[in-house]
Image (cartoon, rainbow, N blue to C red):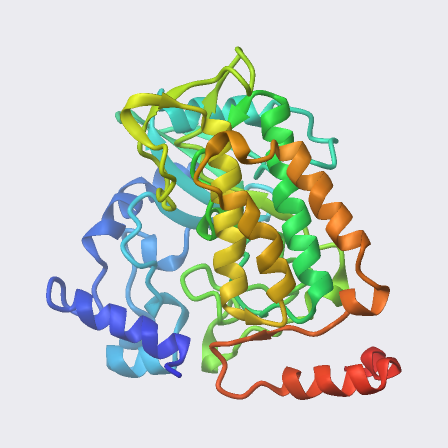
Length: 367
């Protein structure tokens, strides 16, 4: 299997046909231009984005290839995201800055959703920490915590971890729908996790598999999600969110949105219910996730029923969550602890572990 570092190197090699390796990419220069302004507001970008940046590998007498293979922190590149960068905020916390159009649906909805009850345990919407109007631009920066993609390492280890992930996804949809908001772009890429206890050493935003410092190929040190429960998951990307004061039953929209846009009712001319689309997208996201893991066949059977082609036959978000809780409650306690394994791994020690646990359940506390 190709290592993450090799995959990123391949991505950089593809960029080489457009821009020389070792230079800043054109998509990074918009951040370089506003670095002094951001610093005046208390936000520190990485050295790579400073106007007077000198590559560290040049000071060390190294080639870029050597710096990349080492690797050095300022050799790591965010793959062509002119709208997204990480920074250190005024309070010392690591944050994400996202550039959006001023007055855009994403800005408006991010602000409106951030005003909802933060104490509600079903609120799984990424917090909006700040908004920054950019000088002389029709753009604004949304400031959010730097959370980790939920599908990044560590892989899911047991069914308890999967249950927690799935439950929070459904809770988040219940919360959105209870306030008459529909997400309309639910997918794995739009679900992140607070990894402060899962990856306590931190990670490099451009290379999540490496520690923050990046030096000497220090891979992130992870803890099992079940050992540091609860791990909280959040929805991000609100550019497609819509508000429907008429309620979840009567809401109707037009348009084809989302990374998962396989729902049969999507149309540019025939109105459809966006809340039913959310249910389909959530189930599709969960099923796509389960496809990558062994030991979850009964979960797949359960969520298949949510992907019916008839929107009216899909449950509401509250009904989906209640059905899932009943499904989980019917499991024996030891069944919830069964191990799962990532099918993309060549060697699956968890398969052996799972077999041992089934033979002797008390072994689970040591595995």
